[in-house]
Image 1 (cartoon, rainbow, N blue to C red):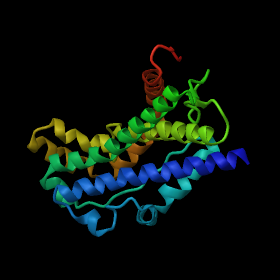
Image 2: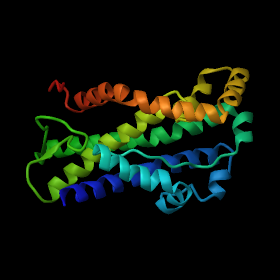
Image 3: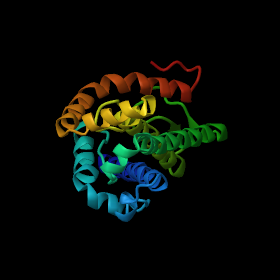
Image 4: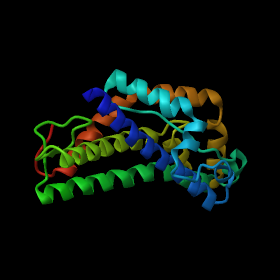
Length: 232
């Protein structure tokens, strides 16, 4: 039963976080001139349109990753017009950053919630950190539930942020690179990375390197959350 309860919590947070991520992409694209996602119903915090578009990435992969590893990862997608992206590579790059920015905001909000709980004396730093245990409640019941929600919110959004910012196609980190290029180079880069083979290779490489990249970033984030405690 505890595993089922943990799985439900992780999935609820995953679905909310992924929906915010994709809605941010869609909203940014709409504001920057591409209405594809808007017409597709993705400019919304309702998870149903996002699940309907990517049921494998929003249902199957998160559940399997939790059963295998005890934490969740997955994906959804917001449609966009490739011709618009090639015509306006810098706008497309801003759209790519909008999703990770949503995850960063959720990390900061969960960190603020943890700090608020610490200031009230309702939470305290745990002796050891796990993905689902970033803070500990003084008492069972409602404080404990809030501690669990904030812990998973903090970790899962950090996972989504770091994974999506890896500079490999088709991830958002690759899509954001045109911001660092001239317009001509950005157009050539985007045309080059749109090839299907690059997306497959990028996902495989990202999956293999993610653990090595994420561990030190997670440790840094925990030590920023609890300055002076020196978690290792």
